Image (tube, rainbow, N blue to C red; front, side, top):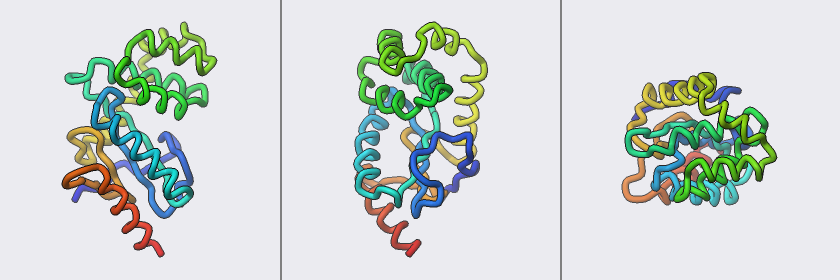
Length: 177
């Protein structure tokens, strides 16, 4: 089983407490249909486990298959620079079927962020470096596709469905008690 090669840090997008019983790291692509399926499951898991679960999101855009994956990731990173990463993250997954410039501009208006700033961010090497860092950490950790999950640093690979993530989290919590 592969382990997470780059530990969670202050550079990550984190929802919850890092000292939670379970730290779930997700590598995902905003345009990946499987990531879209996992998005709603992860939200349910967060509601179910509350403070026992910490979610960490890392970008892993599969640009050969998903042409909007990188622009969507840049949009999320631009929002993150303004303290609105999770709002953008959620909206991008909810708009997964329509990803494109119109959706990104509309999202900026909803978040109260300047649209012209997003246009500049699309060409900003800082955002690309941030995303590339996530990709490299995923590759070093054994990520080959999306979504990829790590539970307390260990790669979780479902056998049949993402629903198995629930049982794996229950087991991880039980192991901490």
